Image (cartoon, rainbow, N blue to C red):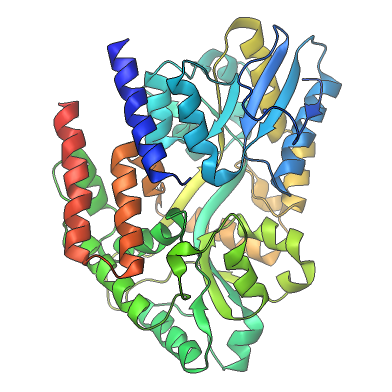
Length: 443
């Protein structure tokens, strides 16, 4: 119990201080329900998720409806959607109070592992292997749902990779080509700045949005080895690739590549997308879930949009096929047992059935299922899947991979860089101190 309490307090401290990050079988899916609800009656399964807006809300609702219609069970599912930026804090506060919903989404990595260690995620290995999921889901997504040889979650929402969405008409207006190197990306950005256009539509109040720049720059400078070495203690986050990434962010901030007040702008409120729509910004480095969001907001504007992976360094031998993201994006974990667990798991399997996969693809998603590339017709989603297939490896987002306290140090220092309030060396030192403290405690 001491270990469990310690882990939960660690999670709680990180999320509350950071204050920033992301519910079925009768088909009751409500936005007006009790958003503090964690448990229901004996036959009610409470499912916490982040489906507060379309298209995600429609996807959750459809899965719950499919479960209700196809299953002969007394169980009903109550969906409790919570806005992305408060979800993690809310989940950990519930756990710290000794409560946890029957089903809940997470992003795998370090936080999921702590949920497991704290006793709030049940192994589903037998249920999983006895289902059709091993044959349906991408192996990489199953690997991200696995901890110590057991499966603890169902990956379902998206192949989510960071990449750059750009306005094709604006590129054409200024006679610009899609950049293939960071140097060319800087030349494109300089052209936009000279013409009074913000190169990147970044809303960095939640911190993870700006983190994408840091991760991509570090990977293009040093590959994945420096990160892996820093995590296992054989290296350090004061490696030159992390300092170089910080320097680039500071340089780009100074050159006007980001909007004024970037650290006060809200991603959840759509402020970055509004800059794209108003054409005051030309590009946005963001997760590939933007395909569905932009299509939902404005199908007409979506026709103006293109996508390209983060470019590599000119003359570098670092592998520039490496992608940053996750093969699965959202994962469903379970805090229930026996018949309730079996029913909740069955509901989760609906996300990978053919009818749902078709619906998700039509909504701009790329669910982590085998053969999904054969269903894609949209050129942007096809480009994203091509990048995923061509990638030598996919680096999970730092704030998902790292232990929560270390992830928060990364997010905090990254945001400081965008504000120009911390040097790259100081940011790297603070990042490393958090990592070392975690390693010392673990040992």
